Image (cartoon, rainbow, N blue to C red):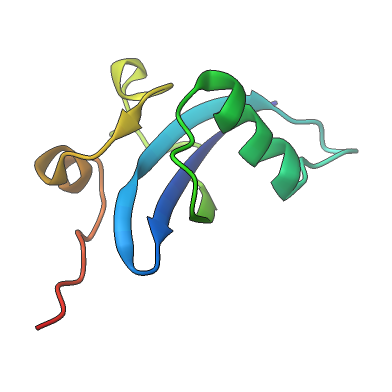
Length: 89
């Protein structure tokens, strides 16, 4: 089974970007967080910092051209389903 993961990276509240990519999972052996983060490093799209991981398998708005790269563009992230960054005043 192929799962799609959305990784959001930040460093002390500063947004660093989003990485979206697919990984193969089996029902018997779900992927561990470390494996998912390691895959982002292997793809060269892990900017460091803290990471929040969400399984977004089945989201039709994520096209192949948006996967396997680091996304920092707010408009694209909103188009992909993000609620946008929270702005602190």
